[in-house]
Amino acid sequence: LVVAADGIHSTVRHALFPDHPGPVYSGFTTWRTVVPLPGVRFASHETWGPGRLWGTHPLKDGRVYAYAAALAPAGEHAADDERAELLRRYGDWHDPIPAVLAAARPEDVLRHDVHHITEPLPAYHHGRVALVGDAAHAMPPTLGQGGNQAVEDAVTLAHHAGDLSAYTADRLPRTTGIARRAVRAARLGLMTDRAGIAVRDTAITVLSRAVPALLLRSFDEVASWRPPTSDAVSFGAEPRQ
Ligand SMILES: Cc1cc2nc3c(=O)[nH]c(=O)nc-3n(C[C@H](O)[C@H](O)[C@H](O)COP(=O)(O)OP(=O)(O)OC[C@H]3O[C@@H](n4cnc5c(N)ncnc54)[C@H](O)[C@@H]3O)c2cc1C
Image (cartoon, rainbow, N blue to C red; front, side, top):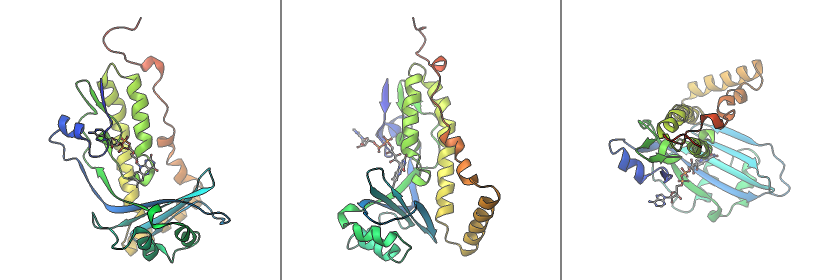
């Protein structure tokens, strides 16, 4: 068994499925940073502005994880540094964003353009080669699921190591559905059209008031995943003694 876990620009995917178009630019770029922020009190949040968003979340060790995403041409980089770029784009946003930016050094800020696979692969295996993670189903990070789905792949593959078609049957529909949701979430969070934004914000406000926790509950299908049970284990043609 060969397990190909070689990421979004997978050489193995291209070798197994040469006609597949591969990943495309998702239309937006991202920044990430982790900083100490002692004494600053804030609530975990993700805030949406026209064509850009910012999220701040506390980490267990007391530091703060912050990320931002914005529509931008592929390959663009700040002429000075990416912290300065964040200051230009988000410096006048609400607390604790200015404090996060003040605490970050230029070298603490990562910037990555986002790419994803738009056309699902015909299978996540070929012969005795199995693709896992971004090699199989690179998706935008807007649901925070790329790494999670890679872990689910690995656990499922361990159960179906003898029958890779069972691995594909288990993983391809689920990851395709989640990847499509991640694309929709990116479109929703990064809208630029004023009328569309007004409709979005009103719908979310009304729905959240009418059905509290509705948005969280819509995530149940993703979060309620359980590993295959042992009676679903396939070890190949030979029955296990
Ligand atoms: C901005 C951003 C935010 C994200 N946020 C989240 C999140 O909150 N939650 C989440 O679950 N996911 C998130 N993700 C997605 C997550 O990072 C990926 O889905 C995950 O890293 C995929 O893991 P992987 O092992 O498949 O690929 P990778 O992590 O890309 O690992 C592939 C590895 O293979 C190596 N490799 C490639 N080719 C070869 C070769 N020929 N020989 C040897 N080694 C090779 C590479 O060097 C690399 O180390 C985010 C992604 C981005 C870009």
